[in-house]
Length: 114
Image (cartoon, rainbow, N blue to C red; front, side, top):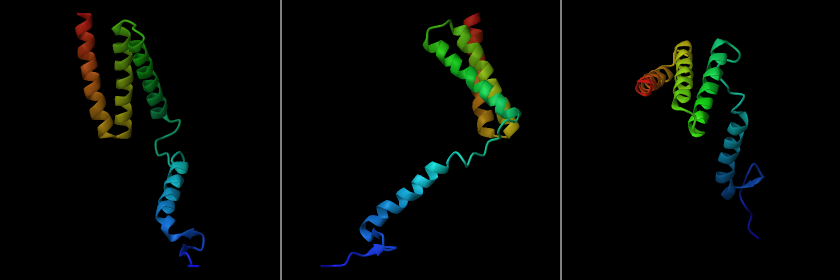
């Protein structure tokens, strides 16, 4: 009978390459919530959740066939709030994205209101 080489006497070497990365990935997945780096319960936290809720309601209005004015007004409000969060966090990608989105939403709102 031939001996099987093991890692730490537990895992056969042939399986170690598969198991070890999986263990590291599982640990990262388990700990992703603990690694949260955005502020909690400060001004930006309330602004971002209000903005997110407004955007979700806007999308629901669009999907359910409500008049476009509801979608535009709520979307503009939500993206403007996220723009404020971008400034509070000094996050250029949030600022750039929400400036562009807000600009196009305002143009769309002006088009539908005449």
